[in-house]
Amino acid sequence: MTRGVRGRRYRCGVTVSAAVLRPTLLALAVAGALAVAGCGGSDETGDAKPPPGVSKKDFAALLADASSSTAADFPATGGRTLEQVAGLAKAGPQVGFATSVLTPGKDRLAFGVIDRANNFVYGKSALYIARKPGDPALGPYPAPADSLVTKPAFRSQNAAVDSSPIAQIYSATVPFASPGTWSVLVVTKQGNGMVGAPAQVKVTAKSKETIPDVGETPPRISTDTVTSAAGDLAAIDTRRPFARELHEVNFKDVLGRKPVALLFATPQLCQSRVCGPVVDIALQMKQKYGDRMAFIHEEVYKDNQVAKGLRPQLTAFHLQTEPWLFTIDRNGKIAARLEGSFGVKEFERAIQAALNSSS
Figure 1 (tube, rainbow, N blue to C red):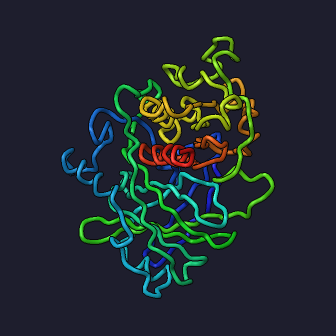
Figure 2: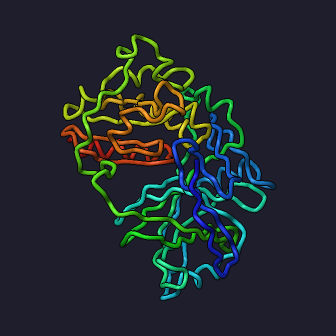
């Protein structure tokens, strides 16, 4: 189920419905049109389809450009309202958010953008925010794109049968000062100008059941392992082929003893690229860092059936969406957490946060 956020028409004339992700439909959605699927191949673009009229060579350059956004690439607010900043951009694209848990403070906001022809929009991107469109704008907050392409050796069968792939996901660190509904403007550079997509997000106050955050100690849960499943990997892993090496260690046995990367995701039941490939990325990261930290994957649904609800491990973490990645340092403290869609670079940065904190 998705819970929509009403679109808001700014002066640039774009109406957006930004979907909040729930565990039964974990995909980027823009007015029901943006389906994120597929997995990477052996080069920079993987299986991603270049926009119409763009060669594969130019596409690779476009992806490189999108991954290098900085605040200096975009207009300063100069006291303008969010509506006035929107007036600097051309109407057309729509935005769908791949994160839904936002609380006051600095939040990671991941998203994808499509044009009117349903093509994914690649380019340097940033966000501007305000409580209301007529309020002074804050920003720009750069949103460099991160690759969703894994090396061929880590490509799952789940990803291989997907279609309409994309190559990157955008994310920005955005400071929300207080709870409530916030207006957001996503701008992406196209040629000599910019295109803009307005939307709204809801920021909620923290509660006693808040998801464990950086600096906190996570619940000492018992994760599903090959041993606990009596060798029945199909019961604890929907990836094909099974990621056996991510089910060898029980989280409770390593918490506070060595760094850990704990990933909640369901490759098959997610039905999209948003969550499935994160397990592929975890396998790729394990090859590089497996001698320094434990890598654990936990499935989402009881008996791998959506109708049976969430597994108790997710309930213990107060999770209602997926995927989620938590990296924990040697002292048992959370060093980084990521929700929704995230790529290779962000995954690796989360690992480095745990390792550096443990050293």
